[in-house]
Length: 102
Image: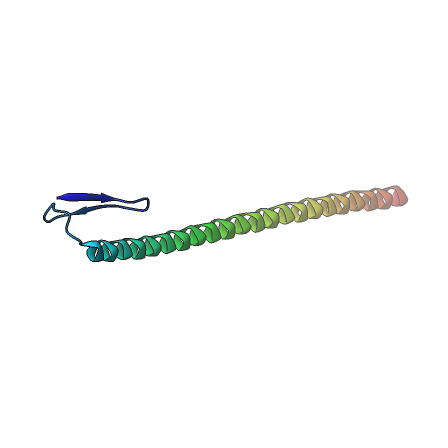
């Protein structure tokens, strides 16, 4: 068993331990390692981009829902104020009618 190390990989190859010229197989192994590293890196980048997009969409949805709730609250306050004004006006009208009649 022979362990070959380079700056970019650590490869474990089974076979004879002599120093025959097997640089072609090492180059093939290097090419395979580089290819698989590139594929793994691409998959990781895609996954990270998808996660970021999902998080951004969720944040936008939460903000839109919060704004909708705030608008609904303002509408409720405005309707309540209008109802209060209507009650005050109705009471004033009733008082005026009572005063005029009496």
